[in-house]
Image (cartoon, rainbow over all chains, first blue to last red):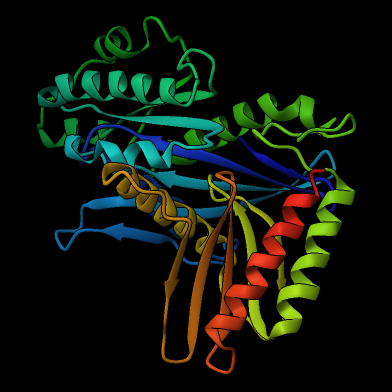
Length: 201
Length: 137
């Protein structure tokens, strides 16, 4: 539900990072914020609990410059991953234009990834959006843990679990180290902008 | 709410002339009545129109994101208790903030100092909202 301001030639689009709790959604945004701090004029906004868990959302506005004569502002949001915060998670999805699903590669998180993806599908339905139609990128996060001897799921297992029907672009990533964080971002921005192209012509 | 030359992917549509009319209302009815800064946003947190007295340096994009989420939470609470809350007000020592719904689609956020009376402000906001609504007719 991007807003295209024909008067100021400005586009505001909303990209939401979704996924199970402690999967690295906030870490993705923090990496982006630190990497592009000189280009991001405002502060990153985080509404979190005292225990540093996301309570409502994180928010980071990101100017990507001009596309087809429009100044494009991508509003990056995360949702709280914890199951109990579904009501607030749903609110953040309002007006979403593009999604990144941050899956946790740790073996023990397999079930939580599946539940979170199913939850995303249900919550999008509330806004009459389909998980099969919305611009979506999968990020298999925490791949770096393997080096530390922590068991992670093989890529084909994650693909089969999460992407066998969706068939969307995916990245193996480490949000902490920054591996493929920017590539994930670039991909979702290009998919989102492509979906808005007809409006901007 | 739509006209032929509108291009939008939102649930609502606004063309350039309508946007200009709204910004004019914000300026003439609210900023000139002493409001420091006023934002009209949609419920997804997008800024539709804004006006200010030139002295405000707030991060309006963050403010819009937080306000829409805040109001969405208030709306959900209202549903739980079987109510409909159409406005919110927070009083600060130097600056106060007033939120008012325009239909269920938009939110008008007004920031003002202690030199403006709340009663007058509410009157002005109510008038401005009626004028904004008429932009679609």
